[in-house]
Length: 317
Image (cartoon, rainbow, N blue to C red):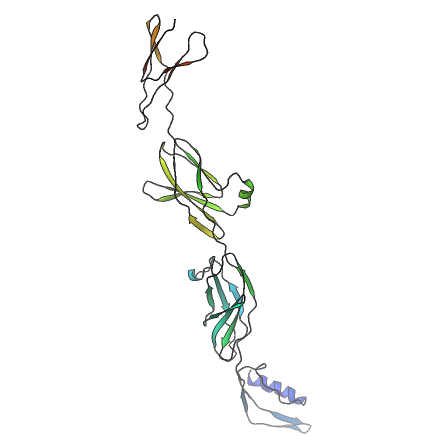
């Protein structure tokens, strides 16, 4: 308070015949005040008195303001909240004449002593749990009043990875599924969960091939009769969970192409020779043949037997 403010205030009070006001710690805190007095009556105004100086004693700090829980976007990675941590920040209050030494954080029914800081990472909490927080500053005089109570909640745990299954396979494709794809109600309620599917390449690296909310994915342009390895990860607002174990599935073998029409050569009156072009082995897998014939007007084909490319049929009489 400046000298003119003190003098103006005292003059106003004394003109009404009041006593000298008490400079208590509730009115003026640790301020060196200088003032002079002057008496007046109907005869006029008297001379000023001598200079009076008074210093008020210090008191506890003011209440802490602006206690906030920092979000994930905080630039300091050490203050990023997790499922078991809460990052806090607050403004330093007025010390009221005695420097602040420390802070005391009230967490539910417990007290957490802190140093002379204005941010803190509260650790070892429970995931997805509600907490009430308030804080007070402490100086040499004592502890100040608590701040307003802040209600917050730790982040939930990221989802666990689902189990991968092969729903259908072909010589050049694998249809993978995960979760309960038959439960449409559960899928509709699980709109916040996304999945990252990865496949292992020839160099042993896992490359992402799908990311999204679906519970199925068809991997195409594969090679027949070949094993492929996959892993999957689930994520939501809580973060990305761990990857699943590696699952390995194999494509099926390709069917042989259709053979050309066989050639029939008459041998005698009761037998003939049937021949056809042989197909090359498919990926080292030998090919066998089945020959079927029908006699006269019969509609049902009868199997003669396997062969390598030539068959003889007799007894047609």
